[in-house]
Length: 168
Image (cartoon, rainbow, N blue to C red):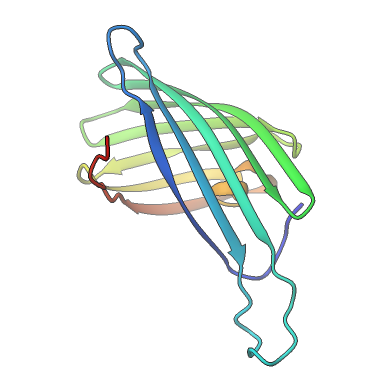
């Protein structure tokens, strides 16, 4: 497993591959994140602790069944050093109100234990949301979302989405 007391920085994006239509009623998207641990404790001329690079990718399919019910399937993989993990999972989002969603996700991975997340998301606007959830994942993005721990934790997450102009 990857464990480090060094901070991790990641950069990536998500591409919307398919929009729902009368022919294919699903959303399809693919995402990638790449990153590296960073050692802030040593000066440039001092001996450096080893840092590690990471790459993560996923493909997700989602279908909205009702105005307030969406199911998602996701295949994902991550690699660092000489490690490789693959996983498959699913999720459900149920709209309790126009602004509050109940969210639950679970995935099986080659790392071992089932990884799960469950909580509530408040959609403040089209681009901003706040979530509170319980999870046994060691992280919220990339490879950390694929590894479970024996100690569930409560997390708060605030998301602000950037909408770039459409290229095609």
